[in-house]
Image (cartoon, rainbow over all chains, first blue to last red; front, side, top):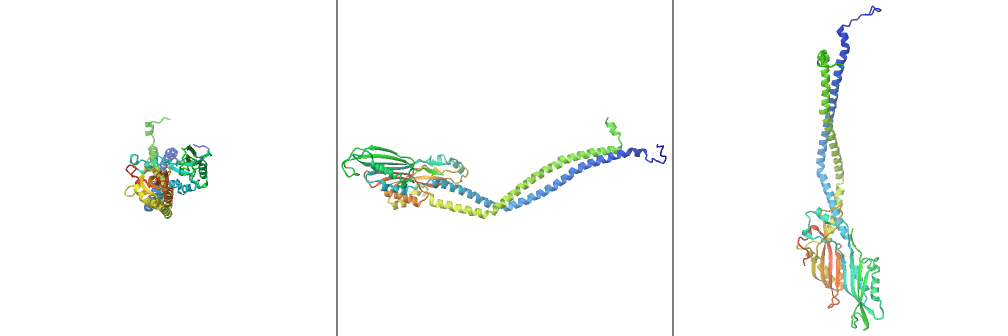
Amino acid sequence: MNDKNPLHFDFLLDSERLSSSQLRLCFIVPVFAVLCLLAPLVVWVQESSQANGIHSRKQLLDVEIASLKTKHEHVLKARAEEKELTAQLQQLGFYRTSKNAVGATLANLTNCVSSRIQLTELRLLTQTSAPFNGPQVRPKNALELAKLCPTNQTEEVTLRLVGRSVQPGDNPNPVEVNRFLQAFQTPAFSSLVSQTKKPKVSFQEEASSSSAPLGEGNQQEFVSFEIIYECLPRRFQ
Amino acid sequence: MNLSVESIKNLPKPILVSMVITVLAILGGIAVIIFLVRPQRARTALASKEVFELQSTLMTMQADIKKTDEQVEKTAQLKVKRDEWITTGTLTPYLGSLWMGAKSLMGPVAQKAGFKLETVKDYPPILLPVLPSSVPVEIYARQPIEFIGRGSFDQIIGFIQETEETYPLTILSGLVILSQLQTPECHKAVITFEWPVKQEWLPSGPAGQK
């Protein structure tokens, strides 16, 4: 063995000499492999316990939500009702804003119609949109019906005045009618007729009559007139 | 390196055992990951998501419930306003017809103004506009009712003024005054008023009843 050191004794058997390296492999590799098995198992156990915790938390939340459900439904019902009422009021509001109160304005007509003018016809007409023709087109429910409702609407209004006026024989201009037209430019009629748009006026001479109810003299001519005003539109906004 | 069944069989028994344990343990580990850990993790993630959603639902519910009184009061106020508009402004059918309702409503007004009512007639209703963002379940329409009668200019205008003052939601949509040769002071008037009506009150039959 070793000749320089005669005191060295080798007590290892041959089998022991061979097993030192083999023992390490035989032990460490399986241990490492078992650890590889145990590690996922530990993770799984951890995940399971976490899942159990989440599950119980979920159950608690379910119970809590169920206990609040009645109260919450009450609020939701009130909220839905508010939405419905707001929509209804909005719809009625559109209608209300379309109102142009004309009664008081039309009452002013008596002040500007002189005794030498006679109105024979007055027409205040609104060009309404298409009517809802009842059962022929009536939808099954409100939502379908709502699709038929217009989203924005403006309706034109016109005022047509027809009448006759006394015209002095020597004056070709219809003075009384012009005065009548000027009266419509005053603020008294600003809530009815459009001040920016000129009216359409047409005249037609009538056959002269000496016994006309409007004039005092016998030498008078009559002129019939037609005035069409564009009024303030009805806006459903 | 030459690896064969024979050479494995010739290995010492401890080595063979350790090899079997190693292989089995690795396969077991892989199986645990595939069949236990991954599904469990997916279930946990799903449950966590559900819990998160439930928590947010609960928080929303609690916040909503806190506002119950405020919400109920707000709704009640709107309801009062809507009911006020309905009772004072809308036209309700009388004996099943809207023109009858209008006639019963306007008869006293016409009488007060001295306007002599002769005929009342209803026209097809017109739906009121709605915003696409807020469509009510209860739709309203406007119902034109035509009143034909006779009176002086002052009486006719008085009737209109009185109506506009008494019924704020009644709107004049048409007026025709025609002078009569036989009665210079008494004119024929065709007056059309509109009222808001509930869609459910709209007539099922054809309009134009007199």
